[in-house]
Image: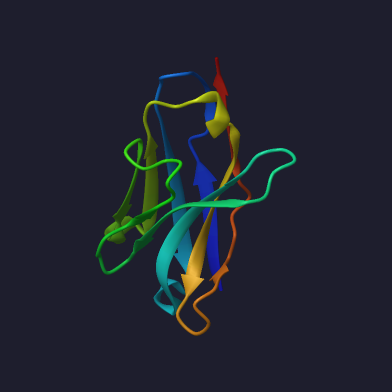
Length: 119
């Protein structure tokens, strides 16, 4: 099993920045990537970014390209999401999840952290 815990959400004004953290623990070797997702009220969940534990080019949704940066610290089994130039439409609950080696699917979701961007 893999456990993930998000932190770092909060209230910020438009144009501001926040950094989210996702600490993973457990059988991390059963995973090969970590991803950030978000879900706003009444909207579908959006895959925001992904990074592989082994490196390579990260994935970003078009809606956050150029503003968000995903990074990892393998020694701490932690993934970060630095969010700059935040917009009110970035308001959502942000979740991290681990991508399984055996199925390729995302699993082991965290409890989420609220990000609210005021205009």
